[in-house]
Length: 271
Image 1 (cartoon, rainbow, N blue to C red):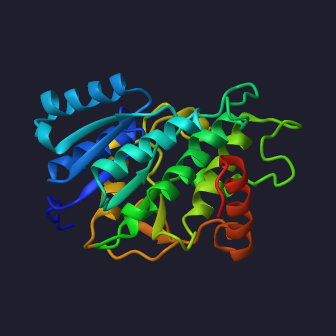
Image 2: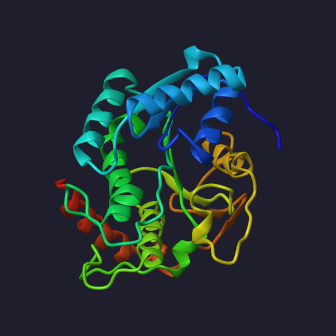
Image 3: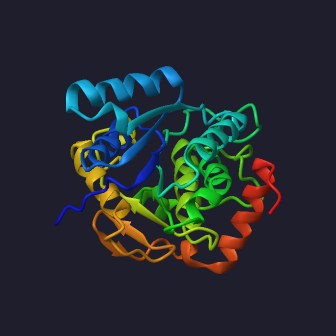
């Protein structure tokens, strides 16, 4: 694979303090991109940028640390406002931050099931708040780091918070299906990618896999889709480097519209 220079690109990577997100930030910075490194707190993000400088030799001027706890939608709004103020033209948003759903049903301060908010709703809100930066100029793109487990998921339209029946795996799968469906939203150009089963904190969710590949290997599939030399089609889904069909729901226009309506309601946005 030929590697193109990304020195004119600015990329925001959510959940960039560990795992695939951290390696994605490293690979992008090594190729010259300016990388906005997001962490749950400003301190965690700063520690991550320090590691990139000291351990990987990345130019500190190419990194910017940003904190926002995705269990608080207000912090997502503050993050978006800061990015818009400091980087009015954003080339790529990598929606990577993710968590395994909690063992027991929990809700955030905003009243949403925790995994649904952290893995999907926060990214939904962030993407739309950053829309002016992503759609201006050269035509930005969004890369949603999803999971093959989205195929096992279903969106419980009558109970998206899963208050009646909660299963950790079902809650996680629902959040990944929603993120994958969201890639087909016509407002921004977006794709989703399953980066492979990697050795991260999410590995235990893949019951059939006893070991995963290195996070850097998964990150390479994400970075490839950030490269403007790689043409993408809105709503496309990739399993590592191969474009494949996502779960049927992810390409149904009705589902996309229904999810948009639900997400707007839950994040308090007016369409």
